[in-house]
Image (cartoon, rainbow, N blue to C red; front, side, top):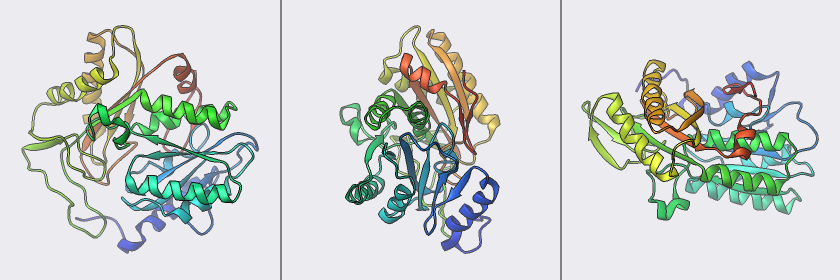
Length: 332
């Protein structure tokens, strides 16, 4: 498929170079690897490191900044960063308060972040790891620890980023990551495939079909369905999210309507319209709605819906200010 690239083997480094040209006042590249960190961070405070394969922009590099991630380690397209890349980012952020690695739950990511954390510990760097497992399509609720992480990483990162800014300890931030993850659910659909740079599409979807529950690397969904009206698809997506979180009247939630790469704002707003109607019909309170593309799959057309069920602690942290190249929260 046609892409605006040069050498397919250089897309990550060239993309990162261009990104840094636009964000050099607030971010800096980690020397020798595909990684970035914040500039001008306070000396104290837990650092938050995230990362994963490229091709999901603005995850993960676009979410580094005030009130969010302290740094990100980047792999090749749809490939985990290697342990040395992760370790180099961890070294660049070492302080006395420690580092939380927030990792989406894929085998390569969990393995490589785990190896890097062990190597960092041998160098005297305090590191803990928290996993994001928000995708309800990837495993039944009885096996929810095996679920993959997808767009809900935005919510978990927002919570732990705020906690680090407020001076929470590494143990407290790690527990909050787990709490936020358990309160987050996501379900995705795909309308069209994506393709790695220099390669043909990595799967196919017929013109009159869509994939219900597809993963961000093109992993098969729960079912291939006949194309339907937007409102019908949204209701089918939202219902299991409500059921898993056991939402009831007067619960407060944050809604994320996430485009997967090629989905227009016109469509995302239509999705949000129906999500809002369905939640309001159940008298569920929408504290905030986020609409945009935050965890993508190259040029895949589709959408994911994420819900974060709030309590007082999560609400306070979510409402804290944040500023990154791709996500902004004014604060309450």
